[in-house]
Amino acid sequence: MGAFGYVAPTSVDDVVSVLGQFAARGERAQVLAGGTDLLVQLRGLDRAARTIVDIKKVAETSRLAIGANEVFIGAAIPSAALNEHDELVALLPGLLEAADLIGSTQIQGRATLGGNLCNASPAGDTIPAMIATGAVCVIAGAKGQRELPVEQFVVGVGKNALQPGEFLVGLKIPRPAGRTADAYLRFIPRTEMDIAVAGCGVSVSLDKSGRCTAARVAIGAVAPTALLVPAAAEALVGSTLDDDALAAAGAACSAAASPITDKRGTVEYRRKVVGVLCRRAAAIARDRALARQA
Amino acid sequence: MSKIQVTTSVNGEEVEFLCEAQQTLLDVLRETLGRTGTKEGCATGDCGACSVLVDDRLICACLMLAVEAGGHEITTIEGIATDEGLHPIQQKFLEHAALQCGICTPGLIVATKSLLDRHPNPDETTIRYWLAGNLCRCTGYDKIVRAVQDVARDLAHPA
Image 1 (cartoon, chains in turn brown, orange):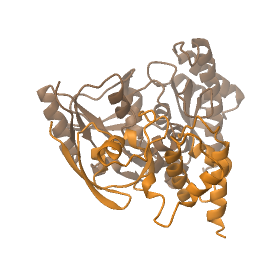
Image 2: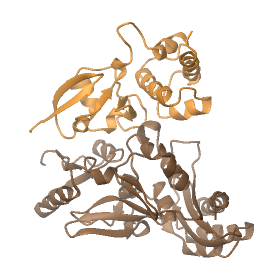
Image 3: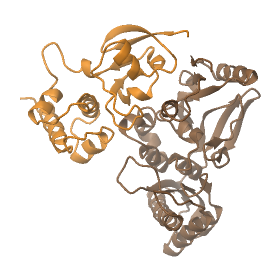
Image 4: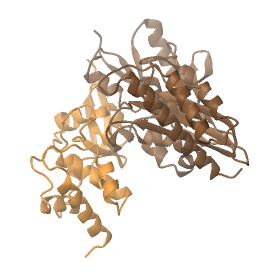
């Protein structure tokens, strides 16, 4: 067993170069952003030596930019900083409420959207919320940058689509235009400091009359990965997001779920609750969208 | 094993130390720098006993590598009181008996400082959510919340 190492490259290219060198040598390197999952792993089941590659000194991973068509959120920005950004919270309230649900004030001082995504927990709260917004991962590697929709990034429990030598630089999110808004809800048995039993993120776009023209619905903690549920979106599009449409979307979420039974809930319970969360989150997103200028 | 040299600021004082890559800020504060006011409870970010401020942001020192401290400003419980005496938060914790065994107290004081710096006039819900990451197994929290409300009133309306 070798010794632990620490490097903190200052550019995207340098991170890629460092990761590439370790990958080529068959040595272990692990990217560090906020560290709220990584440092717990170091104390727990996975104590093997490795080189930790801190990406927080790379300007791009801390960049937050709200453009005319797109929002860029660097992978290493702590969620507390995101939730202090009033314009971002107003634009993407669902994504930011998902970030605000994770852990304590202390955890939010370090934890990042990029880390929550890369950690690839089935119950990661921000993942369905990101999928609902249409977020796309910006991934850097030896061949340059590539983009991958968030719903394709997590490939299994604790597994993501990053290849050796690659890292997540940030997220590109289409700027919600006109009457478009998102919402995220999760269920836990207490008021906070727990992991989702089920979660659902919804984004809807409405026309002037309040009819739904586009929707994205994603569910979390009810399958090995967060899932985009196109059937739920189809149930919403064309409707005024009335009770019947919401019920149909909820039923589609329940049908798409393939949960497990564990101490937090049974298969049957999770299936039912994810449908309820979908209905409620879609109603919140609708009301937020109606409050926006057409 | 080669050690890494780190220069940082702890409670306004420039500090240099050597550490290993996997050592946490909490390890170095307590064992290398002798600042044992910051407590270790769970060492996994659940209990808040090791709460410190890094560039005025509240974090768990057990969830930050010591090498990451380079170039940042760390505030620990030892930096809360002044030469003149206790900080008003500390004084109110004493007056309200908002502690028993005391292990959680440094973390709660630092977390309260961070709360009042950002929300000078917090309601009870804000206080309880902000401090939800600081576990106390003695007090039942009520006296802590009363102490925080009292100090917030005093700081908003100095006598």
